[in-house]
Image 1 (cartoon, rainbow, N blue to C red):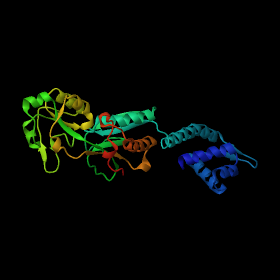
Image 2 (cartoon, one colour):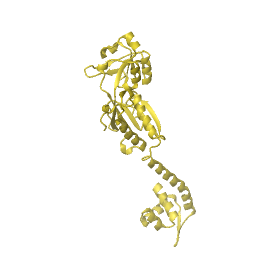
Image 3 (cartoon, rainbow, N blue to C red):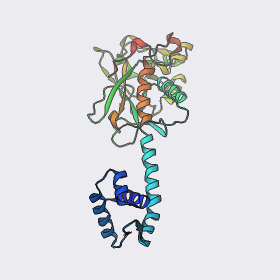
Image 4 (spheres, rainbow, N blue to C red):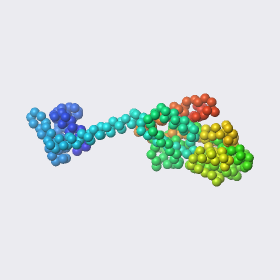
Length: 312
């Protein structure tokens, strides 16, 4: 028995009441459809049709099979239609796995714009630890820094500037670090799961990497920012996330001459040929969104056009 294909064939035989007509509609040779009907009857061990010189009638067992097959075939047709729609319709839920240290301002600008374009789409934003992409389900992922994974399609999306800063009160009490090595004597606010604001802070070439310490660490950048504003230590974070605090003087940049090159944010997904429409649309939208010029830097929502990485 060939499962759904044989049930479809039997349903067409019953509808046509003719082997020849059913064979013609299904694009099959009459001998083939006759052989498959016999195999179906052999499978169930009962006759399903009664042939006469003028017509083809269902037996009682044939009528039962047809009755039970109809909802199965109808349900499968609905399933095929729904699954096919996933290739073309932007619907369902988009699961976006984000690095802990990605700029919230830049991320939310992208998600807000995409959600406005697709009001029926549901969003799930998760902030996952690095190296977890093979252990979690996701539609697309955003990661900071170089990513190497032959099983994923990796696109360079935009550049994210970083800044090292602290509250004026903290600097007045503990002094202003003149070089990265001075951070060893300071309270540094560390972000769990971050490649640039965790335990090791890398600076421009020649300045090296400093293993920092301190009493406060968290997995949420907003919490660390609040700690910094309260004068509890030196913060390293995405520049876009603290521009308001820097402009108002709540935080003051330090070690500006030693800041590293902007961090690359990559967009990761499975191969495009296997993606549902919601993911393909998000990828295309994200690449178009970061290319859009934004005007003055003080109103930064995404990087300016000049700071973009090459799109692959």
